[in-house]
Length: 361
View 1 (spheres, rainbow, N blue to C red):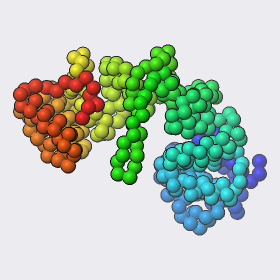
View 2: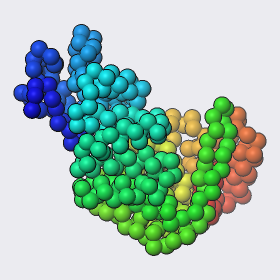
View 3: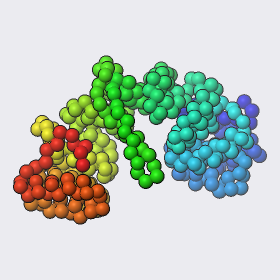
View 4: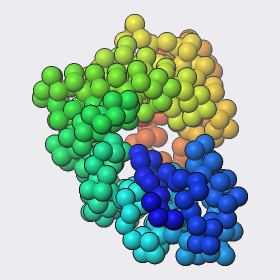
């Protein structure tokens, strides 16, 4: 191997100490510190180390590529692209690792054609790297091209049977292939958004295969929240309330300070019209923490607190908290305000809230 060359594996950049010529690459101490930070997944530290170095050596391709990779992991896609474009221009293709990183940056920006072009190059130059197939699958999946995505995730698992993210991603493609969704567009400001609404199961076998993949992902990485989140949404659509509640409780365990998650889970537990799952006491605990995290200024958290108080038969306090929710929501559309006021009157009548679809506002 020639001085200055590096090898690539699943994480995109793996550098070998001792193979960099001091005259053409980072100083030894900086290089060692940057590699250590990469191994520790301390991506802010990589940027901290390389910023001053690249200010003096702006054409060091390996330093640019390493900082670009760090920016990808930090979701700073524009900065990542700037570094990776320059790195690839200065030092043409070696083993495709920089193209993997740049493809990921394009994915973050939803530049799917560019992402696929880079990921195709990355796969071509290292067809035994599971990560390259995984991210190429993501490029298809994010475009709702699930038939194309499935073999990519399958290949990633074949190459790396411990790749829990590939199991979760393959599970999602199986779910989507086995269900029917309706796309609904809506406008918000200058942007158009597409909302996918579940309609029905069309192939139960595919759905079950998807759920099995989620279970395998969780088995491999029980402390990673992503598969729990995806599986919980599937169980919600299937109206399997006990399994949905179990997954949400796991998510709360893993993300105890995520206010939106706490609020959504509390809302479900306080309002679901299913006696075996509804839990007012637990809902109240989660709602109180969500309100604390949002400093009692979020109307949705206050609305949930009121519902949890009503479920625990604290109707006077429920109506008072609903008053606060209404005050915080005064700029929302009238149809929303009407719903909030109706709930307040319901609590004043000493009636808890019951919903068959707790996603309702």
